[in-house]
Length: 178
Image 1 (spheres, rainbow, N blue to C red):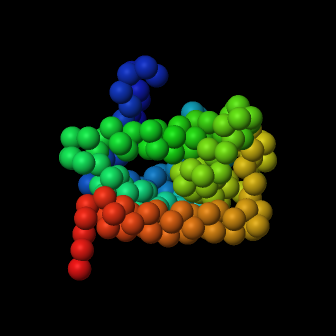
Image 2: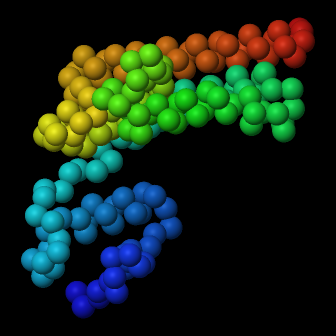
């Protein structure tokens, strides 16, 4: 109490932390309604970071295997970025947040179904805000258990497929022999 922002367009006061985990803990503690601050929101505080880590880990595993393919295919370190960019940009752009079911052109909706980030973001957002129907409608999210199972299956299949493709590329493109 007693600290005010100079203007909404300038820097804001807030906590500093050494790690993302520390920042998450601090956010969970200070979020919510403050009776002494008329500008604080009365919205209930969601339980942050409860279902996200496992989905994030699975997405990380898929992306790690994607980059193994790039490492196996790219002839040099310098060319690896050029090889990675098309797939990486598709995964990032069609992540079910920037481009989602409601905004994707019909001919590009397939990209949402193959993007590991799209499945991950949908699962994290629907677990953080289960009662927010407007958010689900706006982005076309499905918070059903069947959708969670589909997301898990797609991510695991992609992780295994990328790993197998990376192994084949290493063996065939790099002339690895026993």
